[in-house]
Image 1: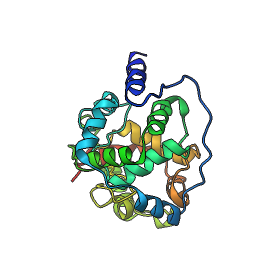
Image 2: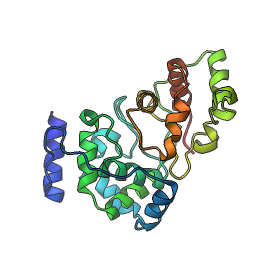
Image 3: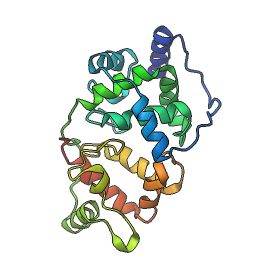
Image 4: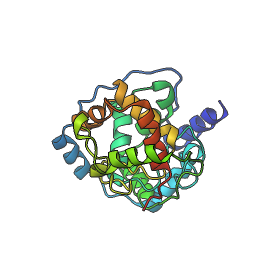
Length: 236
């Protein structure tokens, strides 16, 4: 409650917009197509990492995501080292209503995104993109059989289940690429929640439902193992 109060006060002082309690009215944004997303990203202003660092502090992003975007908590995502295009897309998805899978948890992010203009979003994205992080510090070691299975999913996928290799979009070391987020060093609990949201159909801001299709046939054990696998990697 204190964190929400402080965050609301910061928003009032910075933008003149207060965070209201409750669900609010969901914006109606069209789903992304490859064409519309590409055009939108190209039309965004160039980001400034120095301004982004100031915004990170002023908007109290650090209260959840850490001093430099490396989450100190199992409850929130690490966002340092993320490709700028990915961060821009996520903020636009929150702002425009494409990402609305769990409003109770996402309330703050929705209101924050709605309080930012395109330049501020680009600045934050530039700040996070310049960062790097070490592996998440509280990973659970996988047994050899599960490690081999997950490593195969990451590098080779599973042709029988039509699962594309994770590395084909997210990089061989989980470093991310454009709108595909970095997974290395990600908080495992956040990774699991995200994958389950795609799998259950609660989250559908992925272009062409790519992630929804790939997660559909993954078992819960595989998702949890993937979370630990990526959490143990260093972002590059």
